[in-house]
Length: 182
Image 1 (tube, rainbow, N blue to C red):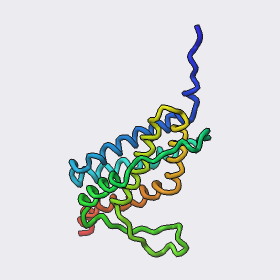
Image 2: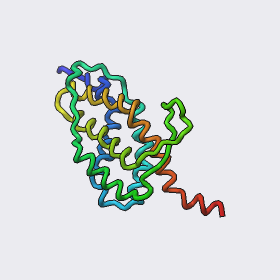
Image 3: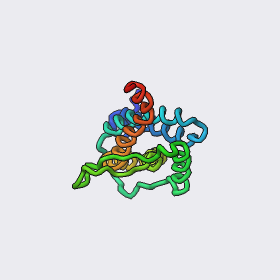
């Protein structure tokens, strides 16, 4: 009897780390697509818990050698992005805006203004594009999906997660901080 090929188990594109990011991205995107049905507290609580997981798992993504660099596409439309953004903006209300220090700036002492809704919608776009591309049947699409997500983590959505996490932490615990001071 001939053993079936087991190349998928050793191929980084099918690794445990990739599959875990895929699972988290799916949960994150599904939740945001139904964000309108959740309370503000449920939304903030979910994001507070899922962001560190996404950050950790994305940091563990393997480096992938891509066979066909043309096999990459982006799927989230401007309308879909705007829909997620608008729901989040309503949920966060006046707490949507926060400030952070951008360490890429020469003068990294001046706080910059940011929007939780915009950051989260951008993270959604990166993860949703990854999900859709990874689900394509050809391996070359999966390779590009993983390579692109790793790059976007290092250059874009990793920063958005870290900056948003601080703002979410503040929103969750600002009342208890004030109580402790009394």
